[in-house]
Image 1 (cartoon, rainbow, N blue to C red):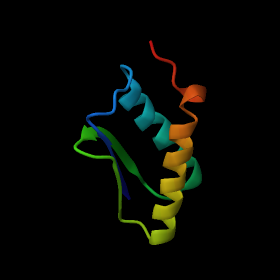
Image 2: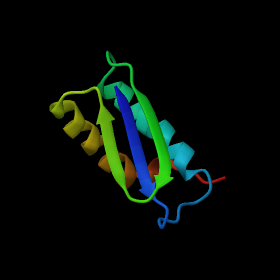
Image 3: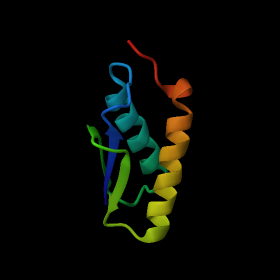
Amino acid sequence: MRIEVTIAKTTVLPAGAIDALSSELSRRILSQFPDRDGQVSVRYAAANNLSVIGAPKEDKDRISEILQETWESADDWFNPA
C-alpha cells in the first residue's frame, strides 16, 4: 500500500511540518494496519490531495479519516524546533 498526501503550495506551514506530518501519519496508519506494508509520502503540490494505492475502498476511507484526525490534532504532536 502506498499513501501520497499533497498539500497545496499556498498553505503556509512551519519549518519541519511536512516531515512531522509524514512521521505521525505513518505511525498512526501502522497502528491501524499492522499487517500492511505502507509507505507514506507527504509533499507540496498544486492542490491538497490524498492518494491510496493498493488498498480496498474501506481502507482508503479509514486512511482518509486518520489523515483528518492527524491534521486536526497537530497541536498535540507537532513541536516546531
